[in-house]
Each structure stands twice: as C-alpha cells, then as structure tokens.
Image (cartoon, rainbow, N blue to C red):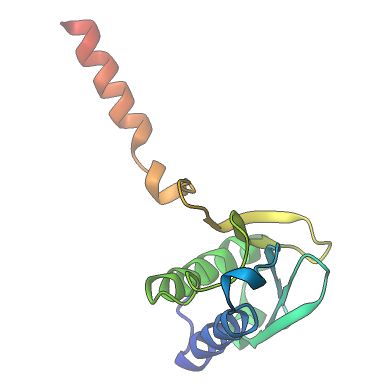
Length: 147
C-alpha cells in the first residue's frame, strides 16, 4: 500500500527530529542506536539505547495492514523513508559514534529487521541486493562445469 503524503511527511518529520536531537560537534558524540517500533494503531515511536522515546509519527494506513504481513509492509515503508533521509544527507550529520543502526522492533522490543547500518566501511546487505543471486550463481557454476 502506498502511504499518503501526510504519512510520508510524518515519517520524514520523525527522522528530521532524530537528526535535530543528535546533531552536534565531533567532541559531543554519543553512542546509541535507533529503535523504530510501529503500532497497528497507526503510530511509530523511535527509541534510543536508554529506552527514551525521541520521536513519533502518525501513519494511519498502518491500521489497515494485515496482521500477518504487518511488519514486512511496515519495513518497506520505513526503508523508503530512511533511504530518502539518508539520500538527503540528514542521517550523515548525526553526532553518533559509528557504527550505529536503525532497527525495526516489535512491541516486545525484539529485532524484526536492521533497516540501516551506518559505518565507514560497512554495507548492510538487503534482500534487493540478493535478488537473483541464486540464479546467477547456478548459471556461473553450470558454465564452469561445462568448460
């Protein structure tokens, strides 16, 4: 389901709030990760390592998501919002020790998915990066065996 512009703006505002709260000078770096906890009641709450709520967003569309696929659907929404904020450079300016991450968690604070991992030399492998990898490897192996 495509999010309404108001919901997308709400997610971007929550990410901008994180960027605002954690902006600072290099000598003021903090160590934290960001835990994004969505609710089927249409809200997102973002927590830091100290379990402090640091940002919220209203996403009414989440109320209509199917319970069986709720986290997968929400993960796609959040990845899109985070990718947009990261592309705009908002998340690069965070005064947070590397590595740090944005993590999707359920209502019991169990990790559902790593949404973004920020480090100088680390690439977080996503499903889209792995799409078709099996077929490519099988084709490569078959080609090697035939030669």
